[in-house]
Image 1: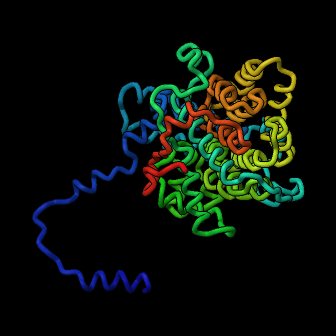
Image 2: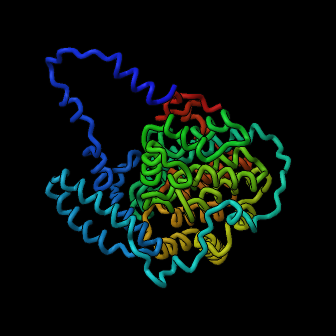
Image 3: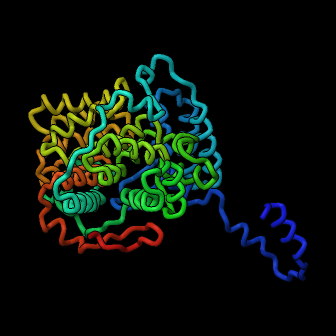
Length: 440
């Protein structure tokens, strides 16, 4: 049926009735910019850990990290903090919109270090120097995929309680408990959410899956997102599809979101890092661009390699070949690897990370990449030791622990019963129609 025909029939078959009750109040209840979303940007807490968060500060911070002048946004930020203090939420809405407008048009800072790096966006540009594609045979595949899935769920469940905090405060509070579950075990997080949507999209579309196929599954299955994914979901519902959904009006496009979820592409492409990288590229561009996409590719590649490599340091070294050269992500990855090679222990690398990335948000891809690399390097394949390092390191701990847990699980590392038993073979999520499923 033509749209005009539908509307014409709707209009010609409608019959007026006497309305005795005004329904405009119902319309007023549908907030375009509700108070809880305003406060999410300005003063919120991370759901699992209650760590303090100010996403609008992170947005400004991130755009500055990408080599832009954010001085106008920072002036508005000062005004916004005063409005927040005075409880003037309605006026804060206007300031929030103005800040996003200034970030969208923030001018480039000439000679900023960010601009000396390449930032390829097409798959052909990104993959041009990747190793020639090979497909390796994987032993005990089903068992290792399950082990990786359990490793991810366990790691993320552990990290949820301390995400958003840094090393000193974490160690002060939890001390010797680090490297194990802290408090009640909960599988709720936003990391695995997107992986379930991806798997549903693959189930429906098979090998010819597109980024839009995955993104539209997000709209169908995922009720809410955080930072980059929040912006992407808002774009998607308005028909702004990948890759534009990942970059349009999205100051968080180089945060951790793709890196935290693209292990799943390694799980569906075991021993085939080239294909895993391509599928991660499709997924990552829904909510990220540039270095944010490379983070997703990296976690997928390491997961895929974990099925055919027996050494975490070998996996780390091989993974560098699947990141486009002369990019900032490649520079950071190799820099952290050099730190690891020269350091006496993991805390040396952690301290260098804190100093090197102090201008970056705790959810940005770079400090969390450093946490993942360091944990894998010094954990040396031991699940418990790696979990201790990644939990003590801080930053976005649930994402990082989920990533290293997946990689170690895929390698076949032993995951002890004190990790598996509390899960009770049950995964609880906020994904529509998948609120409670079995892990096996």
